[in-house]
Image (tube, rainbow, N blue to C red; front, side, top):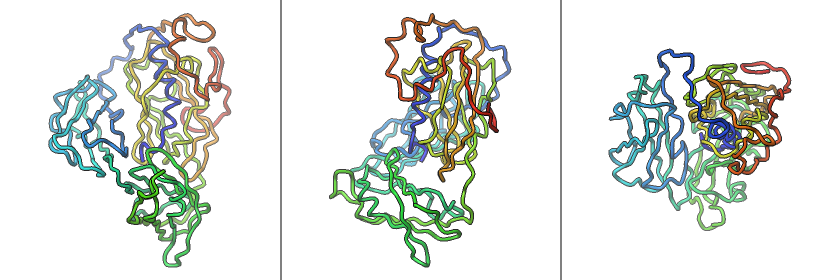
Length: 400
């Protein structure tokens, strides 16, 4: 469900774009010259985890957060189907994987990157990185569901989610799902909404009973959007057991990496990581404010990568300019039970070195105004140069 929703991508355009244009290419050597002992990370993959509709002859692309030892990739990349993979490095951080045989249509393919992969300093991946996706098909299939079949201790207020191989008609889905318990066979009302990547949320209108086996049936009458004759055909069913309690605790940000307040950051830091206390509803996570240096450059960015379970967000960063100051504030994000965090979490950081700033005209670096894209709807949240954020005090790492 990692790529089910990615509205947070929009907010990070400011981070990436600023690094590309707001400062000149002045270089600096961070004062901290300690030996690199940090394990590399997989920043992103194409296809992304849980992506549907992937071409059967698609090339896989993997991007790391730092320069890698290319020789270490030998024997460290495997595919669940498609024959022996062929690895090609297109840069010191990016490799592609091709396969000798086309994948079948409508199947799950799993790619695994082994712990033998190392960066140029010899640090290995801390754990094997695995992701799966689904190949294209004209047949309507249920490819994934949450909670997982057989799950126990599921929160009574949790939403249910189903992913299809193709977009479906929401009215047919609303009429074609039955949520019931055993042995009473009581049915429960719900609402249906579309997420992303063909994920659909089935949200019970009340809390489910405690300690109860719940069965969800997706009937064969569900059909493809604008194609009523292309139906699921065979019903799909999954079951789980609820826990005793109802979740009423808002999610929190457990940590930022690098930590908030870090100065003298390396220009090649590579990524920014946020760890949450529980799975996050991705529709609810956007910065509520940032400094004007971010907001002035909304030109494009790199899609963030969520961990399986949506508890860790990794944002890939390009090489950053010297002296770049970064301030981002988060508030109002929610967990899958709808509990909203009302406290404000602030992350601040600064790249080592002295900035070489372009002259500003009406808040925009001179000569770069014609390169800026249209302002997104949240532009008005930006804080002007020299202004201070005014946010309530709160608890937790990086809060102000």
